[in-house]
Image (cartoon, rainbow over all chains, first blue to last red; front, side, top):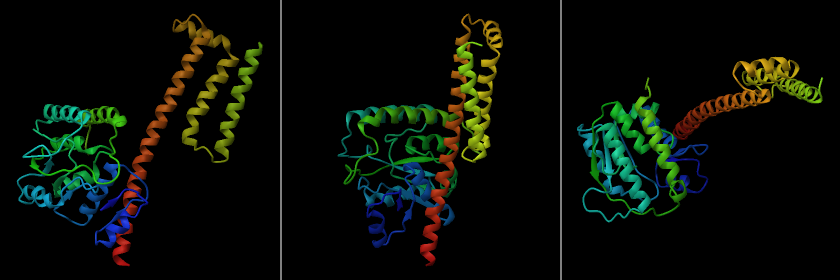
Length: 198
Length: 113
């Protein structure tokens, strides 16, 4: 578990429950926090990494389903989609608009056919662990990750997963930030198309 | 000398001395002081040699010379702000790497201890 600088009891509770906890000394934002896990996995020599939200949105029981295509070597990355299969998930209007926008963006620029481009429920193999350890977008990384995977010619697959409304806390994407989010992600997506990765 | 000339010379000398003093006291890094020193130097020069300002303004086709001074000022401020944005981005990257390393090292020390 990566604790992105939160001073509440989450870190201690996770530790007491037996989790390996990486405590960041200050808040880095989602991309920087997730990258810490990639660094840990890289240094620890892990073959695969699965990522879920800590706010109860993702179904822990679905982890094996997301890991399977990666562990079997069929794909480099598997992404959990809340829109595949039967779903009770109901997105708000701005979110639906945003998801449609990013779907076409990903499809036009990478050729990947995705249903849930902003999903943070994914699993990646060793190759992507190493790449993301060096290059992972600092904030709102999910959509950008598609361009990075495309540049690596990575194989991806979407897997149906269950997602729930968050149990605790506020979303990092409030209505107020939605516009900024759209513009920022679109811009960094386009820049990643023409960026060099050494 | 007109009053505005005296005023602008005084102000740019004060600015120049202030920046030099900040560098001397190590409150401002030499790296960042170069742009400021250059900027205040240009202002001082154009305050003293107003004929140069008029000449330069005419050369680029600006009828009202003080506008040329504003143009230089705005360009200089933009340049320095872009420089700051780059510096902040670099600091962010360094800060991120260090925070991540601290988290990983803390985990290492917990495991051993």
